[in-house]
Length: 384
Image 1 (cartoon, helix red, strand yellow):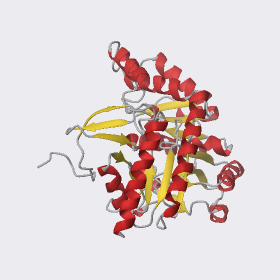
Image 2 (cartoon, one colour):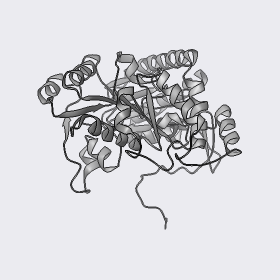
Image 3 (cartoon, helix red, strand yellow):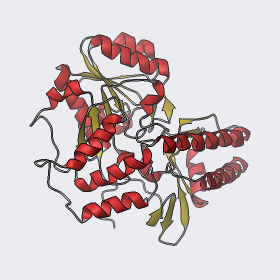
């Protein structure tokens, strides 16, 4: 009997080691990892530069708390600000904590309480971020949620215009819904959010926990749409597996988050920051991001051509290396077939296969993944 709470439906795989795009289980089987820790290992497993930075920090200091100045916090914060529309950073330990901080800051700054989010969104599992999440399955069984959250249909500009008024503190949105099925926001919809926030003096919050840190071929996915959010949240890919999150906000918000207003014991931990600094040095590089776009565009084009033959494939969508294959009711069978052949992928909602390879994946590994996908889809088609 396990001593763990059964909160996760786990694969029947016991991971022993990982390097680059590969994971190896206890039996010695090697897998191509197109989950990457759920968009966390953006530079692959145990990238040598990140590992070196962590080891060097381990030999200096592990933890001192935020009662002390830490120059590495300033360095990473400056890097995030320089590559976003923000100016100031609050470090925490996860995406949920980053979103929680964003919600608190929005209420405190605006002195309003109503927050608009969208159906099929996902923002975390704390009480506030769970409430912000527009999915009943995340809410079920936990009793009364946090007041004054409103859920609207994604990409519905008219519903948004009808709901918006002076009582709204913020609109919180993923520019690409990850858990909701790799659904892209339209540029018109996202710009409408920004315009309405400006008109009604609400904050425009973009949740980049999954889409950020190069995942879509830009530092942050909102940059594809020429937006300027007031707050951006990041986590997953930021630390290459070390627990770290960040809320990035514009400078005028600093006053609302003064001493004592918010805090965390472990946020901004030097080991996590060392990992983040090394990770950002690799990813926030123009040539690296151009290569991500080139590789991902070529891969998606080949994938689209290959899967034309399958009537149960209704859409292939995404940006960069955040790709969704909509496949009717065959998601589970296809994922299992791919896994048995050595390719790890993830579901997104009930009908979508989500591919999230490390951004460092090679063209050879991408071609290997295409071969496994074709074999898996072909075998599934035969059994239908």
